[in-house]
Length: 203
Image (cartoon, rainbow, N blue to C red; front, top):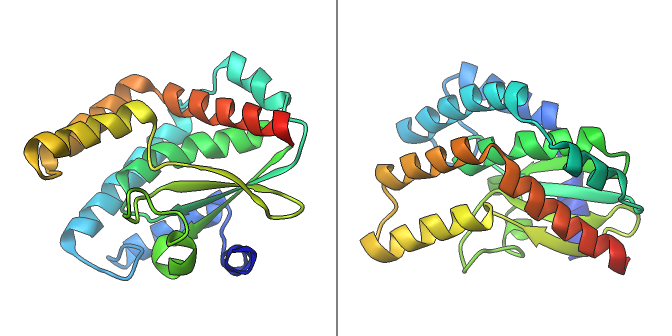
């Protein structure tokens, strides 16, 4: 596992490097990933607009700013993502803002299709769902926990829809984006910081 993580870290990007890779590909009419399609390009363009907006509007609550400051150890947040992923577009700006506010979090991103060995270690119900956040000890690269592909309430929303309708269509994609809009990033902040609190206690 450690070799897989080191391999992926060698190919990892900072948040702004990731943004640039996605933007540069879009200027060529391409999305990230091994597959190219009109749909993936459409979603990538939507996400570009979404992330630009969220970078300006997402607020880490004062309480969560204080919780970030309480972290004692150094952590590496390694996220598996792709530019076409709607959940990633909602969540990566939050993680980036949390990194900026904490001296103890280093945030890196890797592309799923370029890091299959890593992705296969962190499947969700057997699927390659992203984004997937892997919490590592910054010094030893030991895996301490993982999180994703979305906050629990949003995860349940999608799960229940699929159980009822058998598919994930445009309706649930719209419902999910509306959920994110109303949630304003609070669920992700709270879940991530509760997880970090528990890890920090154990370390």
